[in-house]
Length: 162
Image (cartoon, rainbow, N blue to C red; front, side, top):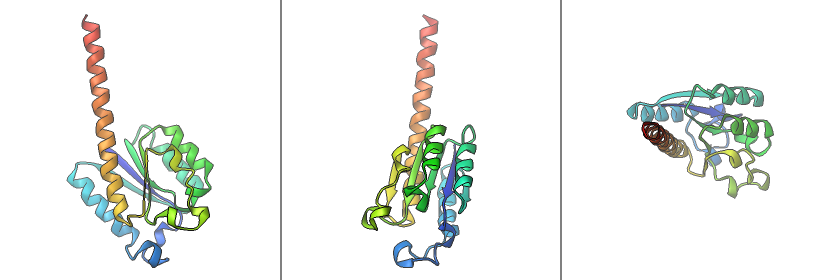
């Protein structure tokens, strides 16, 4: 199982910016915790952060055929990027969107995520722990998909035997 974690603009500034909103944990610390949980569960995990919208789109597209699922924090692009939304929709992979803060308690312009509408789920407001919740959720979704595919293949094989 391979999961790609995509981080959007300003996520590289965690631990420095708006600590009252985002806390003091740095992005590398969040990734180290995720790496530890992934290793315990025999999951390959890859991390990517950029401040550029097109690079996020490219990374999502690269996941097609290479990853089983995506954890994404599009950050400010959550509220504005149709391009990222369309890329998520196009790859047809399970995707969990994460926000450290509770976007529904923030400014009105932050309360709607256009990217979340095409994701499998949204986790917001749990601080850095939201990434852990996303990883566990995504592992479960991928396992269920694999089990359904296996059952479908077994059913098809039984039908051919008849």
